Image 1 (cartoon, helix red, strand yellow):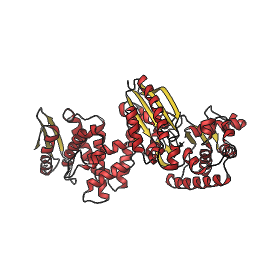
Image 2: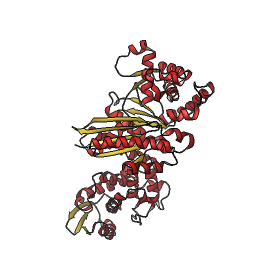
Image 3: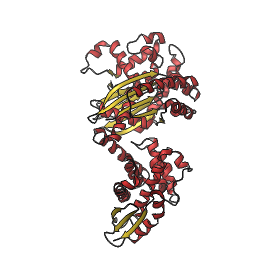
Image 4: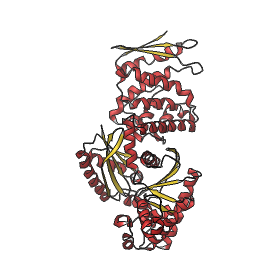
Length: 512
């Protein structure tokens, strides 16, 4: 069974987790974490400093040795807030590629939250019910309202511990003026978050990342009586304790904070801002406290890799539901009734399965084709004329749960070429797609164009399709439930030249 590695390049630290697939589940083989403070220079100057880059590259090289030692089959490297904000992110990604051979994927705040939710909901006890998940990292804080393992609402805020330290906390101990500015900023951002999240009434709050662990340990050590009454062995902190700890830490010098249990020298410099975020968030939402979970972004990345590889894994079904919910939500947002494109989706799936020996596309392209079929008309929301261009732009730049930026680029490229134009490697659209995927995209486009051609008259019942594959030609026999299939036959015959160009086989279309 395969072995996966997930690397999370955060604003404060880099993390590696290697896991093997055993009995359709993930078994952790190795973990590592190194504090690199990639975000310090970004939040101050807008660029990643050469020193921070070099420190991170050294950490990644050590991770690379561990990956090689465990003979990892697939590696996914994701970067979050600091790299999202940095003007020189492309240069950093190029250095990572040169030093390790890894492709650096810069993910959005919402994608970060979705992956964290996937990892926690899959592995954390109790997370399948109603709960609120909080991940406060170095550059951002993701807050997710979850019910029955599904995302109900989510928001990403710029309330990261390193970011707040760089922007507001400039004295040691923290001055009253700096603290007042910090609290005003947190108040404003949480007010925006509450509007997006809506009312939240949950019995469980799960907090991830180092700030939550430090606050829970400090609360347990400083308020032993309260901690001793906890009913579980899990690391927890109640709201009153978090507020008291935040006030205490703000009055201390950095040297004093280092001595607090759970804080340590690396966390002491950035703990104050994170502590005040937790205190305000818990109080404003009237939450009793939180339970710390060691799970995080890297676990979600591994869970998605498992879902995409093993269809028998429990997380695979969860991912499929999440993706189709995201597709339907995007259709609703742009006024598209998903039922109208359901016949196109069904036909492109049929073509994919029947012509597998012809197109030789990877299995994941079946989903990419179905997704493009369902969302092909969202561009009409902007303008009917040239709507395929608008569709491509919307799909490439929208958050669709379950689809990475690279996957959205592929889906958007497939949906782009349903009009008069055909895929061209020099097009701006294809420049966003990895070169090794260009041939696959062209083949997928041809299949989707056939499926669209099969559904010209949407007022009538969809035509029935029978497919026969021969060494030098493909025969499509069409029959209509009522009326004739002449329009569909004509539409498909127009695709014969492009089909021959892409697949080197003749396309024969007949009405039966």
